[in-house]
Image (tube, rainbow, N blue to C red; front, side, top):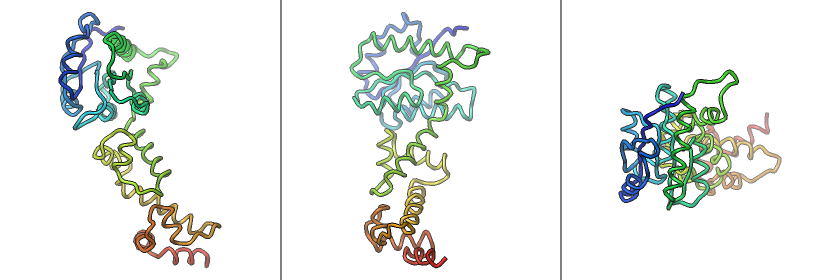
Amino acid sequence: MTKHGYRAAIIDDEAWIREGLSEYIGWSKLGIELVRVFQDGAEAYAYFERESVDIVLSDIRMPNMTGLELLAKLHERRSVRPECTPPKVIFLSGFEDFKYAQEALRLGAIDYLLKPTEVEEIEAALLKAKRRVDEAQAPATPNGPSENEGAAVNAEEPGSYLIKKAIHLLTTRYGEELHLADIANELFITPNYLSRLFRQETGKSFVELLSEIRMDKARALLLSEEGMKIYEVGAAVGYPNPRYFSEWFHKNAGMTPGEYRNAHYRS
């Protein structure tokens, strides 16, 4: 079964790029209708809530909502509204950093093109997106899902993927002076979006999770065979000020680090 009447949208915060993509790509020749152009992800998402679009050509870095955040939200929406099939997304970015491509493809993007991009390359990516739309429309075969369908299934929970990666960063860098913005920057999303994801996926805030990870590590170090001094344990878990570490530990454990260590050795 092949779908006809492919609908596409462009998202870019630079007007001259929106105009260029609208004018120079052979939309009619490709059999694609360009239905709307948007200046950021938030504006586009509001439209996608009302209207269906099959293919999206989007920038990565934009105000209000980045391209990666938009793709994540579209997949999250499907988890509660299965009838809302996410569009096939092609990213255009001026940031020559492979991490952006990795994140984009992890979240289910069809392609990642580096600006400036030749028209022919964009058109080839759009044809690829059309094929993916058709594959998603095709009925499942007795042998199970195709490779592409399997990839789509794996990308159904981008929010969970982002949080897993964020927690991994916390568990490996808990000894540093960490802020929500630092982790968000590593994931190429905004701090506000990451904060919402922490709440949605774990029921806890960034600060609460980081504190739990540091407490677990502090307890382990206090009781380890290495015999670290208390101020050394504090520095190792991100609190180089001994007094602050002792107050923080007491607040969370109900006893000072020294009392915790002594209580363990008496047991």
